Every structure is written in C-alpha cells, then in structure tokens.
Amino acid sequence: MSGLMSRRLGLCCQAIAATGTFRRSFTTSPAVLSHIGKQSLPFGSDVVMTHDSTPIMNPRVAADLHSSTLHIKGPLGEQVLPIKPFVKLTFEQEQGDSLLSVSVENSEIKEQRAMWGTTRALIANAITGVTEGYTVPIRLVGVGYRATLEGKKISMKLGYSHPIEIEIPEGIKCTTPLPNKMVLTGNDIQKVKEFAFKIRKWRTPEPYNQKGIFVGDETIAKKVSKKK
Image (tube, helix red, strand yellow):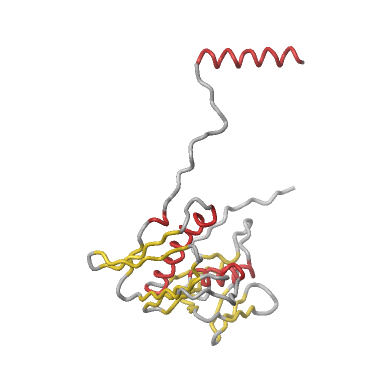
C-alpha cells in the first residue's frame, strides 16, 4: 500500500513540474471591504435629526450603556437609535442637500470597524422608515386558511380547533385586502418583520404540500413524499 501511495505522489509532483502551476488552498490577499460606513448619508428637509450626546446610564439593553441618542423624526413618525460612544456623527450641507457622515475614533479596532457600517445602515433604515415606511405582505396558503381584523387583533383560521388571535403591536398597521392575505406597514423594519415572523410561527411553510404562512416573496422547494 505504501508503494502505491509513493507512486501516486510521484505522479502528482511530475504533473506540477510539467505544468509549472500549483493551486494553493489558501490566500494571503486582504479581504475586500465594502466601506459602506464612509459613504455620506443624504436626507431631505422633511427629516429632522437631533443628536443627544448625554450618555445613557439606565439602558434597556446592557450593550447601550454610555451610548448617546439619535432622534430621527419624519412625516411617518419618529425613531430613536442608540449611538456607541466611539461613533461620531457629522452633519453637513452640500449644494442645499443635508448630509450625515459617520466615522469612528479608531478604525483599526475590530468592534469599532464593525459598528461603523452597521450604524450607518441602521440610520439609513430609520430615515426610510420615517419618510416612506416599510410594507411586508403575508400570504396564507391552505384550505380554509383566512384572516380577519377584530379591532386591534388579528384573528386567523389555520386548521386548528380554535381561531388564533394575535394583538397588533403599537406602531404597526395591518390590512386584509383578501381573506388569505395580510399587509403589515410600519416605520420600523425590525419591528414589522419581527411581528410578521411571529405570525409565521403558527403555520411554518412545509415542503410537501407547500402550505403555511409565507412572508414577503418567500418560496419553498417542493419535496415528494417517499412511497413504499
């Protein structure tokens, strides 16, 4: 067995020598970064931003301790974002447009570099939320599956012995253009999608009959059951 392995190794070395190439399984080139944090963030005159530099001493989440607060107000409401103490916000005016630049104290530190682009993306989502809003459609696929609005609650028939009732959170609106379709709207994309997937848990889409609650343009690959 050792002789066979030696011959195979010898053939591989001869092939490499003949072609003059050797494909390595790793690379030493640096990773290509998106640099999204460096891009200035434009916003219209209908958006008002107020940066409160007072440190948060009693945060709702422990990670927000000593962070400052950014208030973003627009036609569709207001959002409040915690800003890490090492993140710097600079407001500028360029040719009549309002711009927001996000920077960090030391981009060589991994945590600061990670929060740089994340903070910029969260602020961009908040601006879109208070100006345009977010819409998430939900489809109920199944025989007899339907949803109706009862005040501030959603009542769904999903094949259980009783209807499923879910209270609509504050800041989210729900409409039912069709019995098997719902549309959630709100200015906070995280809250809207979180509520959508809370609804989805009652009937997670299954691949065999492709029934369940589908969020957005979600699809699922069909599986064929095994037949004996």
